[in-house]
Amino acid sequence: LTLFGMVLAIGIVVDDAIVVLENVERIMSEKKCSAKEAAILAMQEVSGPVVAIVLVLCAVFLPVAFMGGMTGVMYKQFAI
Image (cartoon, rainbow, N blue to C red; front, top):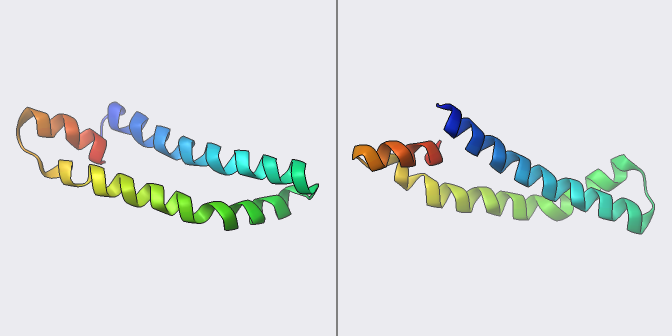
């Protein structure tokens, strides 16, 4: 795994975390509940879309891991 692959992986994880945190903040401001309750409610709402994002990314990036040549080497960083 190269630094390029690590940056891509971290970007994807941070993107999902931002979606969850924004939803927690929205629930805390709308329902005036504690952080723990808001996190539980947010994960109940957002767990489906987060799993869907992961499945779509796997469907797109896993096949390119098997490409050959120089193009395959570059695309392999996206697949990891």
